[in-house]
Length: 197
Image 1: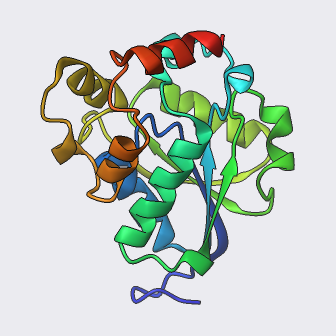
Image 2: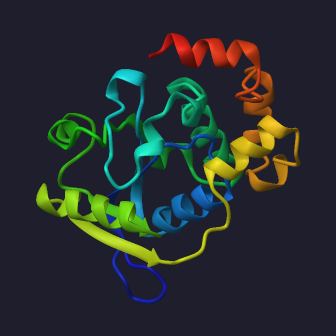
């Protein structure tokens, strides 16, 4: 299939993220990739505490307080965000994506797909190198030194009772509210994160 500008769409594209939680910057990335492929595979990284490895260029991402939402909650965030944006559910797949264990990725996502990335820092460059070392076909959608927002910013606002909702796709807000995962300060959520270590 060919895009309006004459560019061919990939048959299968892969994106990935922790989505802790899924915010507007993530949705921008998902939709940019979705426009460039016929089927979009969304990989959710760090799907459980045992598949969360240490990353030298971004060590804080593995901490329990940076990972309050379960795989299932993040699956719903991805699913609801894409549906809310009008993406055909039949054209998307959502899978676990243990990025910290690159040798395992071929068991979770198609190796013949086009892997889309966005790069903001050394961690983004490390991910690109990791995919290239695996022999995966990659495409960098953009390199920026600024972000719309970050999961860290959203989590801090949730913890502090600030206005976190405007930083998320509308469809994600009820997912977070309905699953009791409103804040890392929530004692039940803290207990769950501690039990996962």
